[in-house]
Image 1 (cartoon, helix red, strand yellow):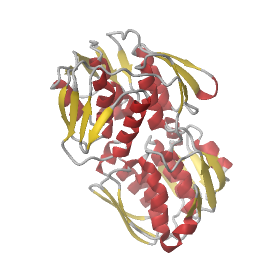
Image 2 (image 1 turned 90 degrees about the vertical axis):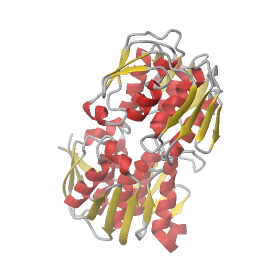
Image 3 (image 1 turned 60 degrees about the vertical axis):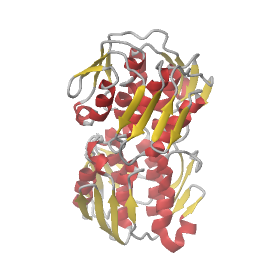
Image 4 (image 1 turned 180 degrees about the vertical axis):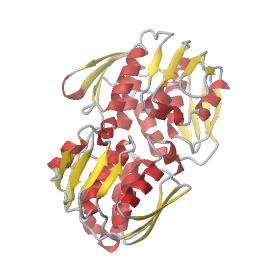
Length: 421
């Protein structure tokens, strides 16, 4: 589906959608719990549906009710020969990959899309092999068998925090105690904090001391009975940025007390607004501001990079975004995608090995850009239309269904004007 957007300011209020990151984690924890859990998921995106389907294949019963509510029943007996299709969802693959091995099941095959097959898995595979698991295949599909054992897990933390989350779900189920030691500087750690918070809600204790995580074995996941999914800062960031570029936008439902790292979007908008920052953000309302360039360390907030690149186009001066190399192995190479798309619109943007350099402060022209089958690229370019002096066409805009199926409905509700081609 291609969309042609007429440039105009957005204005109004929108409710944040539930966090995809939290929803993945809650579904898995509920499947491991001692009794059924009702989860108020709200929006069920394509990635979340992938995790629901995968958990059903692993022996979980999940009943879908009204308004996105689901009831998850604990795994009673995991089948030991199943194929788990993870689609395009890195979270589904990396979170569930150690689980069958932790429960001692043999013959699980994990598969997924061609792009998912290109995303790195080696650090997780290597550490699982060292702890008793037989893994066949150099890339998807993988066949996994054997019993995962406790012990010392040495894991790099600069490739994907999802490896760590997968192990944090699996290791409490083992008989022996375990320890995870991160061997590199930790990146995307707010996502790990979110994992630990959800594990705590289900009665599982993780003791963290810097880059070391101690996990007792024989722990029991205990259902809270009913639980909400917190609202999502990652997707709310697109509307907050649109407020800074357009007129005024309020986003309801998101909490500044969240453990989600992408709440940093508020601080970054305020920093770009400089001396006017007190007027830039009020509560979770963002007003149009004159922005100035800043340097941005993206190590802990990689998902914000596409929309930050758009903000940087409007900011006077040179913005440097760095420590974002992991974006090359996401749904697309997001650094290349944003450089190509914004260059096509006339932006002065360069691509470095681990980031982007943008000389901003001028209008963009209209034209045609690609969605790269990447939800965050499509949403970022939709917001970029606010900076354009003529119509912007986005090819492959259906990619938003991966995390935010109603994105363009909300875009329209805020005053956006577009045609589906």
